[in-house]
Image 1 (tube, helix red, strand yellow):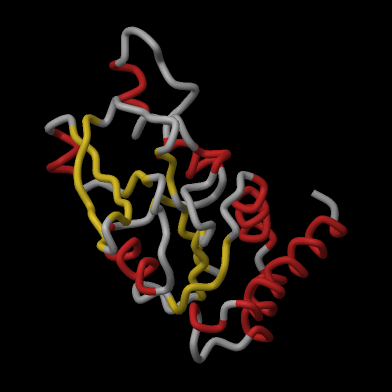
Image 2 (cartoon, one colour):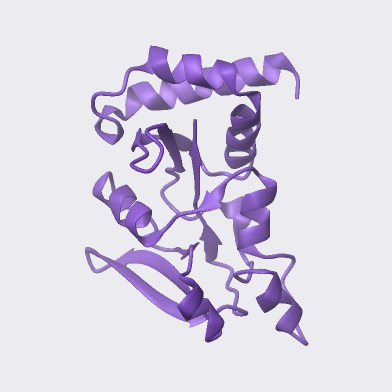
Length: 181
């Protein structure tokens, strides 16, 4: 990726940051920019999120690391990341009508991770997301071991997190990603 693309991406991120201050109260763009300029790998991850329709934006400070957290803030699950089953095991288990890939590996290839339940609930406090789509969520091992995977959406003015077989896939289910810098 050329620096021009990074410059374009930074302009896009700054515009989005300025347009949605409610998503990141108390976070200053100059600090975000400094961190991004020091971590080209994170810029590449954010470019991948942007390129698949995610509209990443700062959503606060990551509780685990203290870093600046970015998340997909597109109104619906990103169009470039739909029709995927949950993970490699689910993809390999399908005998017929396999989807083109899986959410866990695609997120990892982008340098990102699927949102956890807590992160998804936090995102939903910042706006109304996934009102027509749904998003795979990082699934606890005990649920995954039994063949299931979690996903979330917003319907009827409420946020729901529920389950499906990990090998299922739908045209309206994708995933949202989380990146920390």
